[in-house]
Image (cartoon, rainbow, N blue to C red; front, side, top):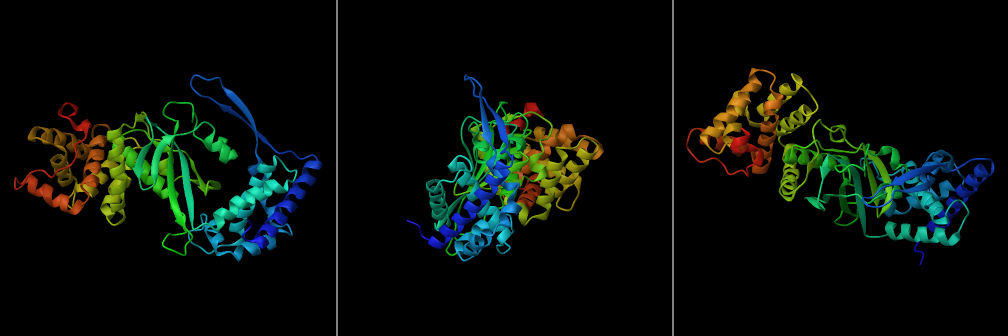
Length: 421
C-alpha cells in the first residue's frame, strides 16, 4: 500500500522524464559504459563479469536530470516530508537540507535503482513500484540502518572481530563492494581481495532514529570513527595497517555515499601485515574505547598524533616525533627524562627490565633512535590508554619510583618480555 500517493506520483514522473532523456541520448549513439570485473576464490576458477555502470553514467548527467521539469515537483514533495531530512543530511555537517542534497541522496539513487530493476532504460511500472515501496518503507520507518565500509590492508583474521561501538573487522565477500558501488573498482587498494592481508573490511554499523524521538537522525562521523579504529589496531598489533582511500556508505542497505578516509588512516606505514588474533583483537577494542580520552586531554592527543606521524618518517624526523610523543604522554611538564623514567616504571616488571628500558629510551635524547625506541613509545601509549586516567597514573608512577607503592596494574604486552629487551 502506497503511503504517500503524491510522492509516488512525482517521483515516478521524474524517473520517467529521466528515462526519456537517456533513451534519446542512446538513440543518438550514446552508450552506457561497462566494467570488466575479475572474481577470484581459492580453489575455484576465475570468473569474469561485464557490469553496466548505470550509476556512474547517471551521476555524470546529474545536472541535466536536476534541470528536468519533473525534478522540481519531486523535490518540493520531498521537502514536505520531514522524514526525508536524514537523507539530505549526508555529509552536510548538520546544515539544513537543500534540493541539491535531496537530488544527490534521493532522486539519483532512486533513478539508478529503477534502471537496474528495469534491466536498462526500458520502463517497467512494476519494477519502479518495487523500488519505490522499498524507498517508502525506509523513508517512513522509525529506525534506519546506517553502514560504512572501508577496505582494510595489512590485517588477516580468522573470523569476525568485534571492535565495539558498532565497528568490526570481517572478511569481504567476493565482489561485495562492486555490487553496490559499481565505481568501486578504481577506488580499492592494489591487490584487494587477492592478497592474504587484503581480504578484510573495516565496517561501522549504527541505527539511526528519525530525529524526532530518542534516536538521532544524524549519520555518524564515519571517517573519524574508522580512523580511531585504525589507530587502535596499529597500537595493538604494531602492524602496517591502513584503510582504503575511501569508505562506502549505505542507508537501509541502499548506497548512500562515498567519502574519503582521513589521510593518516588511509596511508599504510612501512612494515609487515599482521594476523589479528583474539588477544590482540580484545586489546584493540579496549584501546579504541580509550581513545575518546584524547578529546579532553590535549597532551594525550598530542602524544598519539606524534607517535602515529613517526610511523611514516625516517630519522632524524621520526626520533623527533617520538621524543615529543613520550614527553607529552609521560613527561608531566618535566621533560623527556621524566617521561623516560615513568615509561620504564610502567613497562618494566623488575628493576633489571626497567634499567634496560631506560637505557634504550636514553637513546632518544642522544640522537636518532627511532628503530630502537618506537615500540617502547607505542607500548607506553597502550599502557596509558588501558589505565584510563593519565593524571592519576603519573602520580602513581612517581610514588612507585620512590618505593612508596607497587607498580600500578597494567596488562603487559608480550613484546616486552625480558628477552626482547
